[in-house]
Length: 637
Image (cartoon, rainbow, N blue to C red):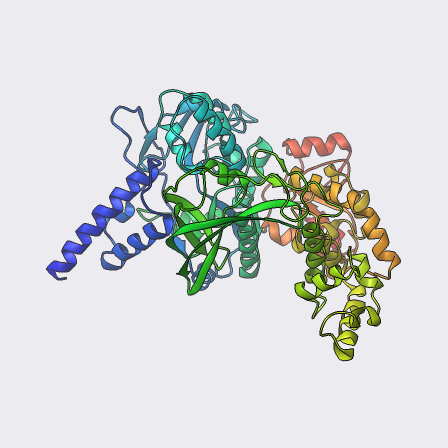
């Protein structure tokens, strides 16, 4: 190693330590992407440098320090799907959202919360017990007199951050710079603890020596945490790399919605024996891996802010910037997320901003480097129909659902994309709407070939092709049909999951919010959106049937079999991973669910004498209780 290499390593290590301390103190001077590049450069030159194993920030000497019984380590990370695939191999893994917040350790003694501490430097953290009392989804008492440690992430939703900024200003405090930084900032304050009520906590780890809390599988930890009342970072048991890739697609959708700060996903081997066998490095556990999308950042100046109305009536801001190149693409537009984002960050023309592009998604605003003159401004009327806009503290919306051109065309374009009508472009749809041929989705199926010949530059051959493409879409799959309706908060995967439980459209239309929440992966908010959306669009659905639509249910969604339509709950540790039995149930036509209700057909357990809450509820409701052999016999009927 040359003298130059030694000097460079020393310089890089100093920079890594400097930026780590700033990051965990809530005052980063560079983006995550730029920091990752800096750390990777040091790792290449000196893989065992102690700066790489340093986690978090040293606790200020004036703070009360509390040691961690087990170190709070960082995570190994990759940007490469191939590397993730090699790491997963053939192991079932649990995927979870990687929340960009601040890690906390919550200590319970005899089931009562007695201490909360930050990660600090990984070995000892700062006592923040006085602040977490304000956080609504932190559980003060466990469902049992357990000594346990719960670890998780403290963060601030975008919508709550907007309200928090207003309160900061009202109190005469400095305007917060971002949801993540404000969490770290408030944890370090000695006053204004009540502002922590804007934060949320998602649990991701359970540590305890109690025999009742010893599990064979990671997913069972999450099941217990959920039953205890903790909010979770959307954990999912994944049996293959294909399922892991699908999960990453779902995470990317949530990232694009910008309501919660995510910077990737975390995967953990489901078999907890592997965690013990593999152990830890000085920096991270070997049984966990985080995945992030490689991103590039750049700076540019905002030239103007354009507001446009989406098919859901949300009026969204886009910054037109001086062109820059990111990931090989020329960037001229940057999403500014929503109206609240513009207001909170006071975004306006002539602001010099930093932007990022990760995972080939739309470039996003990161921060303002140098503000321009003046203040941000909102439009008062819909740019498409002129209707007076409504503001809910987060988004501007156009209430004119029936006749706003942007909402009409966006809804129809979404349908065209979802059901796969080839050659019917946005430009052609615009021509149809200008000629008064199409105002709604059902109007597409009233078009004749003569109508299509009226379109500019459309001759006999193209008119015939368009007509046949539209006609062929009448036999679309039911999941695609429902996805094409464009109900907020749903996608094709959502409808496929629902159709595994509700085998036809009528059953789905009759389902309540409570029925939908019983399906794994559906929160109350999305369930409410689906129920309301299906009710609102019932006339459109009826009209689509009248014009000849014949949606069919894929045979892959309804398996039939001896357990067809029956809900089965699995509880406790079994002889095989939970995914093995869930697959068995689905192949027999059943529906594995996570909670016991009056609709549950049977509960499967390895201990039929257990007094767990699920078992007690099953007995109270008269639900059958099966062992593994009972389930195998039922599936082989």
